[in-house]
Image (cartoon, rainbow, N blue to C red; front, side, top):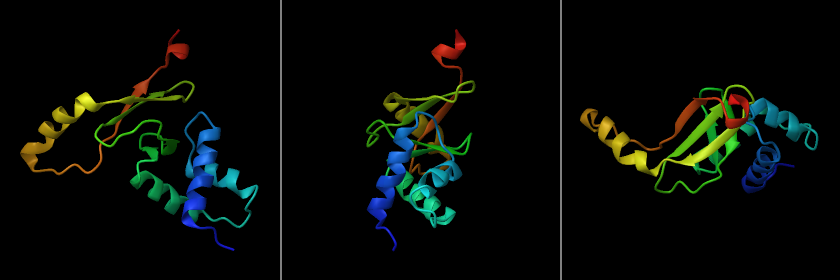
Length: 128
């Protein structure tokens, strides 16, 4: 029996929140298969796409992984600090960046629909 989209989204969010590190779609799939062996990759990808569109999950483009959103980004920009050593991700409010980013792309008449900034480096623990 197929699960409703809202239930599937809840399942994937639970998996992401249970881990404190970014997860790839296939890592999420593996976790879900323990309770639901027939779940297929397209189902996970579709659900992650919907969660990303809703702003409930962030896709980390640089490492092709996902993390749950931990802030409200209605009028702000998520700034995700990704540690290259331990893989931790800290989410920060980049509201002050929005005017500068919009001004930067305005000359080309680009219409931003979604803002997200990734910063790669080393967290406090790994840098010590």
